[in-house]
Image (cartoon, rainbow, N blue to C red; front, top):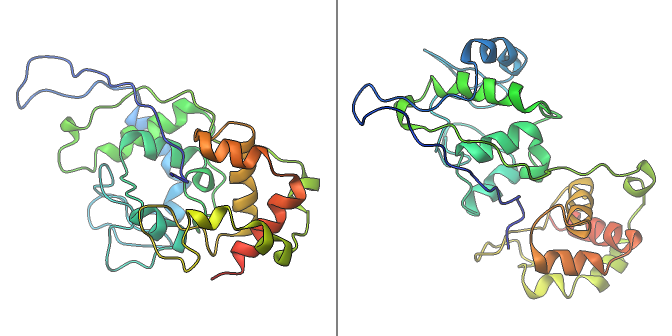
Length: 236
């Protein structure tokens, strides 16, 4: 079961004959992307001599495993995503830039995301220049799959009953390890409550594509989701 959103990628063929001069099809304006990236540079460095800041530097980000630097302290959410096998390919970078918390629940990245697709493509075209072999990274058309859900404040403000959540959790813990150990199924203990609620409602509304999770979430009332969120959040 994947907690992050599975992304469908339409592969774009590389133009020209094979060889050292072959370049990937461009869908973004790297020069414009450099201007947009200025907002990101408050936390992230890129280019010659780049260092970690609030976030890790982004040199060579394409096709790198999540939480790939030993000398940077990552959030529990990103570490969990690494254990689940998250690779920063183009599609997942696009999804993360659009809505970080929708792709990686529990990330510390305090950024609401870039909603305009062309703005994201331009930023990715800019970042691709700082890869070891940018000509080998094709830029693909992004998925049209919706990656976020807007919930009413009345839903997000429901105070979950952790004891009731423990009672409801037996179906969850038939798959998810209560001790937080990863055995091929994502860890959900210690999730921030709001992230848990958003994820479950995204499954309930069939925005997140996993049929079993859609069925499970579809049976839960808002108060029950809040109770589960409170219970699992307390299991640090």
